[in-house]
Image (cartoon, rainbow, N blue to C red; front, side, top):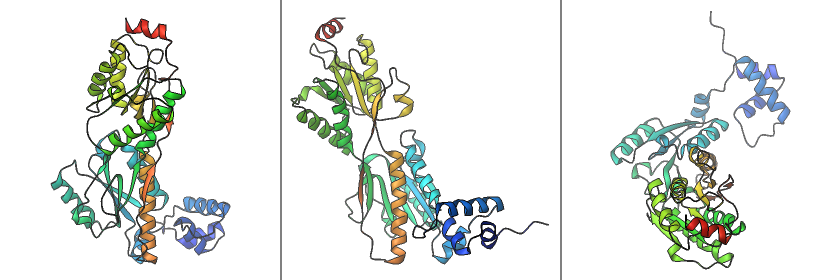
Length: 356
């Protein structure tokens, strides 16, 4: 015979606490005052007995499925923003919720189909995410479902959103170069007019101004934000007689192109040229030689924040349907120092490298 499944009363007896304490502990009730030692004892007892809370029953009592959906254009299929998924999944699991993933491939027909599917699963809320920071229009089909925007924003003031701080990322990246003594700093940037392009240019200009360095328009060169674009723009800057001693790259892929251009011109990184960028795509930043100093986009943190905020709004709505104030969160991009930044070369060394 199959042994009976353990109950919450069995866990309470095993841990030597009340049924209420077990419920508060395993359901992660944030307002409950459960001591850490008690929490560990309850969780250990539940693990020994093989007990898990009945999420479906709990959801039915609250008229919730305790399920969220992440609907994205290409996040699920790209190596660049996959940390959004991990951050969202881990936060959902921590809070006792389930996260379902849906990818549209930027196809409107697929998006409508996926929305019908996720609504059919009666999800309680949706994270609407994009592969890169941009403005979006949320589909009308989601108008009655709580939505939080991830790495994007909308004109709808009722939609909460979380995005990276593009301006501060660029400011801090350029400051890193300035702090090492650089004054001739080129910027190879994205040709597309998106929030990251605008914010990073403003941050670049601000950092220069704060250091008393004049902005030179001809040191800013734009192309596609991929490795070939980085190669072409860096080659253009580094072929000048008065070439810059440092390059701030729009992203790691453009920085990789700059590495190639420097190598072709016989320039050593960081002895002859310092390079810093934005992204922290580890497979690139750590794979380049020397390792690339870069500002880390907070993908994991954006996914985590979005889930925390969405669940918080859902719980608040249960208590007060009118308490639905939206929040717009801008997260910092911390610097990850590797080995691509050093003091600028002395004039003699720079001249020798220029004539190589």
